Image 1 (cartoon, one colour):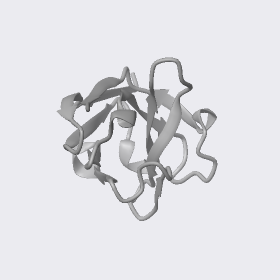
Image 2 (cartoon, one colour):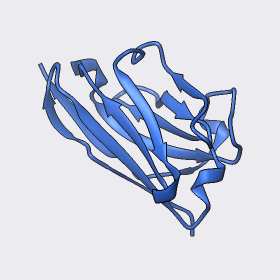
Image 3 (cartoon, rainbow, N blue to C red):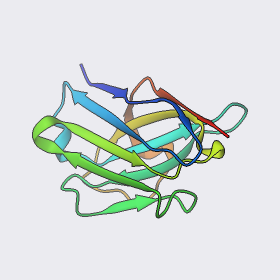
Length: 125
């Protein structure tokens, strides 16, 4: 079955870096756009970044532009989120999600059909 497994979360000091990975299985991940979302306690889940199937298009939320970089290795069915200059407000559970299209223009949860279980990112001040 379709599976997305996130890894790479953890505890980091403010200003530090983490790299999240999302490994897809049970489907041909290289054909689909993949996004990263996050949800902090008491807040709604929000989109962080998205990358098209061939990696040619990317999207970033304003709050992470210039600090986060999304990339993918289709040969390894993996999408990465490199997070630099982390802030306490970046702390959340981070989820990866796969859409049913090569690229999407509506960055909402409804555009993504498969979700991982999430990985916790904690940023200490």
